Image (cartoon, one colour):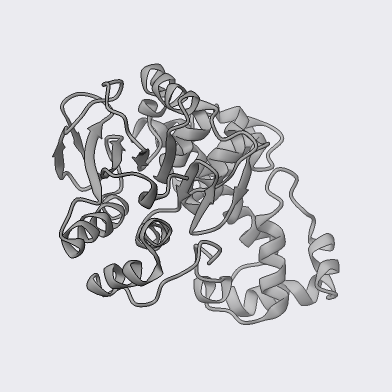
Amino acid sequence: MVIMNEIDRPFRVGFLLIDGFALLAYSSARQPLKSANDLSGRQLYDLRNLPAFGAQSVSSDGATFKADAYPGEQVDFDLVIVVGGDITAEYDNPRILQWLRHLSRRNVMIGGISGGPVMLAKAGIMNDKRMTVHWHYADVISEIAPHILLERALFVFDRDRLTCAGGLASVDMMHALISHHHGASFAREVSDWLLHTEIRSGESPQRSGLVERYGVTNPSIITAIEAMQNNYVEPLTLAQLAGMVRLSERQLNRQFQDKLGVSTMAFYKDLRLEKAQQFLKQSTLSITEIALATGYVSSAHFSRAYREKYQLSPSGTRRDL
């Protein structure tokens, strides 16, 4: 990583914006660097927007950002950060993927925020490097490159790669970057200016726990749900789940029914179908591949179950995107 006190010019950061990018993630990454400039009274960071396609990029909520530079231009960036959102065909654009590989060969620092790390994985520049991504896209990464060292962290720095789950975690990542460049005291001054007084480490969790999500504190139910989430491809049986929590099948079913209003395996089925819906919306996997990835032995069986839950076929879900 480039240390700021070793160079006598601004640290050049390019934000590569994929249409539909997460606006909160982008602004949470850019604003701390701009505030660092303002508070120091000099340009510590030279910030450029690079729409991936055309002269402007549109965020997830319709805000438009014009280009300050363009991918492939002869600009010597110190760091290029891909900011993305929902996974679209643009993530497979060969021109952008090739440019990222070119930057990698030139030893430019490369980052990804929110859905952006998916494009880094597609470019093949995360091999043997630790990384993170927003939990919503974690399974997409696992399908693209199952060998990648994926962590469920807020942000990860690994040599010349920076990846971040996005949202407000971008502020935490930039606090760490500014601290690395200009010291912890100045980084704290920037964070205080932004009223971000509770700085989180990169290893902090991305999501609230199962207790908050499902409103249950029963340890047997929590353990069973965690096991379900770790076993989509080859679903566990009721007997296996009950054995993990040392209850009879009847006792486990009664607890699920009492606390969540459904049987154990009905809850498991819903989890698998929710995961399938995410794959349909966020990946280019075929319906057959999605069926197998969520524990269905055939696309026909999967399609019936999916239509029963969502009153829409898997192909219909894709058409509606």
